[in-house]
Amino acid sequence: MRIGVFCPNWVGDAVMSIPFFNQLKQYNPESIIFAISKSWVAPIFYNHPAVDEIISFEKKDISSLRATKHSGLSLRSLDLDIFYLLSDSYRSAYIAKNSETSLRIGYQGQGRTRLLTKALIRPKEKIHRSNLYMNLLGGVKDLNISKNHSGIIITDEEKKWAKAELNKLKIDDPIAFFPFSIASSRSFTKINSLAILEKIDKNILIFGGKRDQFNSDLIKAESQNSKIYSLAGKYDLRQSMALISKCKGSIASDSGLGHISGNLGIPTVTLFGAGDSQITRPLGKRTSFIDKKVHCSPCLKNKCNNNKQPLLCLDQIKPEDPWEKLSKI
Image (spheres, rainbow, N blue to C red):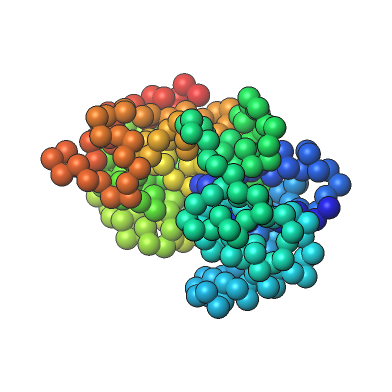
């Protein structure tokens, strides 16, 4: 059997889909499984033991209806028997439809139900997103996702590179710091970041994307902690993952890098802002989180709408709390 899986569109969600791939391979050990994804999340699945091939689309490949249709048509050569959609978008269903896969499974909504051959109703109860994905497989009940979450593989060559890179920077046993998120309502403010970092007497690596580089450099410049290194925007995702794998612990916003760290088995504490820890907390035996559950959370908004008390959810977290919790993992 040949099975295609359209992966989630964001790094954190892609990491949370790993239990789905693990379970899918367990159910179908002889099948060929294709991870079909946007290019920026494809690195999550490199070397994954349950993924036989990765098909990735660049932004231009799905930028218009015509381009999206062409991308779907290009998948016909895969001759898929089943196409699972972990993304809830109309675009992913349109791609699956044009792939001519006979069995297309996903959740209803966003006007795409008619494009699916098996459209499931989303569970009414609140469940972790990893279980939401696995629910598409059917029959998965009370599965301990904490024991089935692994799958990000850092190669020996990547580990060797990361070790050499840290040696070049003269950094030993660093703590990773992920203050940024795609949503401002989940990101630490500069004031939050500085307060937290002042409580940590360790080498600290600040990670983030290119768009975070200015703010990362600003945090380093304004901090009194001389052991801070700003790495945001200086490495690609796979390189960042390799460097994170060499860290002794991580303090994270509700972000993709926090999910990566937890999946790699690095002690990780995630600080929740607008997100819901019951749904999107990182998985892993060495993960923890802080969620103050203030009156306006979880709002699930990308921008804070609490004008009287902006980012109250994050401001209620004491600067010493993240390091104290991390020290106990």
